[in-house]
Amino acid sequence: MGPFSSGLNRRTVLGGFAALPLLSSASFPNAAQAQAAPDDPLPSWNEGPAKTAIIRLVKSTTDAASPNFVPPDARIATFDQDGTTWVEHPVYTQVVYCLDRVPAVVKAKPELGKVEAFKTVLSGDRAAIAKLSLKELEEIAMETLTGMSVDDFKVAVAEWITTAKHPRWDRLYTDLTYLPMLEAMRYLRDNGYKTFIVTGGGQDFVRTYSQRVYGVPPWQVVGTATAAKYGYDKDGKPFLTKDPKLLLNDNNAGKVEGIHLEIGVRPVIAFGNSTGDREMLEYTTGGAGARLGLLLLHDDAAREYAYGPAQGLPHTKVGTFTQALHDEAKNNGWEIISMKDDWKRVFAFDAGSSSAR
Image (cartoon, rainbow, N blue to C red; front, side):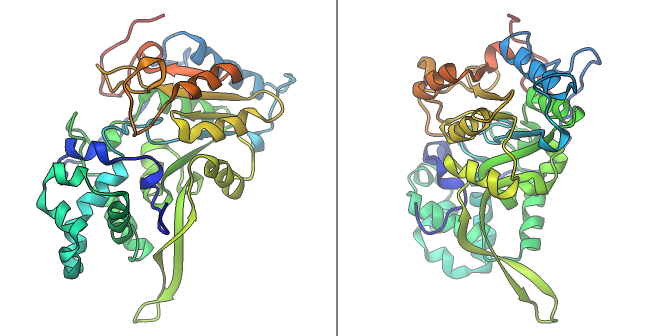
């Protein structure tokens, strides 16, 4: 890892670049809303061990007469983002943002147009972009995610996230949130849980849209964080500048450290989908009382993607779910959510249904 980390280098992402258009097209979003029947808090889930485990945990931890009762202040649920609450393939959304920002950054700093990494992105040559080194990606991330005021960054991300579309579905990235996970978040909140996003992605990036997309306020987002520098503009007005100094790499063990630093309470339930979430699930389920860890396995190429390499699924460097992680989940009693078998619907716009168990 280099001296600068934006959360983009937590897993190798180069292979996905060639599948993406260089710049995103525009459309105004319709936020996906989970609609639950009164008698079923998780209507987009098929009946099975994962759904049963979630409902059982919520009931046992919120019943004052239960030996597993958890006081409201300690009801903490954590969700990874990329690959857990929305699509992460063929490449992370924040990487697409960085690439899309290159023309604007070069316009503001013309000297960057002579730097090879920026020249490659501006060329639009997807094969060449896919060959960018990790060091070159960090250079792009440094220039597109730092060096501006915090307020200017929020405006830029907010504008981009309401126009950027995924190349496969030609829909906004924010439309590609998983309906079953939105239902789980709402069900937990309806029962006194605080839901947190704990992501390897950039904390400031996710905070820009977390409330609108997930119902999670920005102060309940824990992510990879860089420093901010306090200063004054020409009129003496105070402001913060995003500084290229890593404070927290919120992936792997860093997720547990981030939970301790920013939440201060061990989660009761945690959702993830890859090796980067392993320690968070270990920490969550290692506490006393009723606890639950869940991992989403992407095994539905028809409705989304299929990758592992657990269970013989195709290998990936974006959201890797190894067989070793699968085996650890089984040994630790974590629930493995099969996208193909456990979810009736994947997206709010998806009318398709998988086979019920």
